[in-house]
Length: 316
Ligand SMILES: Nc1ncnc2c1ncn2[C@@H]1O[C@H](COP(=O)(O)OP(=O)(O)OP(=O)(O)O)[C@@H](O)[C@H]1O
Image (tube, rainbow, N blue to C red; front, side, top):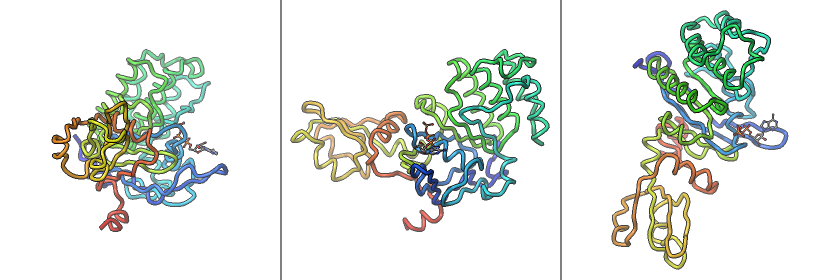
């Protein structure tokens, strides 16, 4: 596997105080984090959370109201960053009158590092005829051509906005495999927004969670997920026991009859829990994400690695 930091510097994305206000209100509020190069990162959040707005700023389609983003150490306001970034937008804009072959030729002419073999392989493996006009293709076939354009560019950073939503399960499986192989072989950093949490769990090793325009969670999945525990046991006075609430951060809890269940952020050992007859289980990534998405009031969790230098200095 290529060493991504040798080629691109250690941080693919550094956002600092990033905010965007539309006429109706704030779509992003004071988002600060960093994404190390070479990661496959899921950008997760409910509808309207600010995911597309963040991707729009990162690809220079939108200007932030406040704050900055750097890609591989270069401010996104510098047009030089565009060469290293490929973006697959939700609406996949392609010229309907162009044939597939003409579309790939345009990709080749516009991109100095163009990889025709990769682009053609992606198109051919979906049996999309090179001579067909884009306007005559199905939604899934157009997505495949858009994927081919993005991969053919050989970007250092690949940004994908709900890339798989109109693909059938076989095509999703194939293209997600290709994405992971590409990232592993070339050290490509991938940032991908999606609502398909189970799929994200398979593919991604880093997480950014947005809700109502604010960053709720950021960091490596193998740091974030194990810092949570699913606890079940006997409710006390119809509620989660005080002892659990006092010692740990409750992300989400339910009481059903005499039982409670809670997803907690473990702020220390759970050893006393065994005396209390609680059962503790390790949650999946999907369970952690669902708990955060359902609980807008849960405290934010930014792993050390994902903190900007300013955040680390403030925390120290
Ligand atoms: N061009 C715009 N003008 C005004 N408001 C906008 C515009 N684009 C987005 N918004 C608002 O900003 C907020 C964030 O929208 P955004 O599209 O970034 O969310 P999202 O997380 O990508 O949502 P989804 O999962 O539905 O695609 C929403 O409240 C949306 O209505």
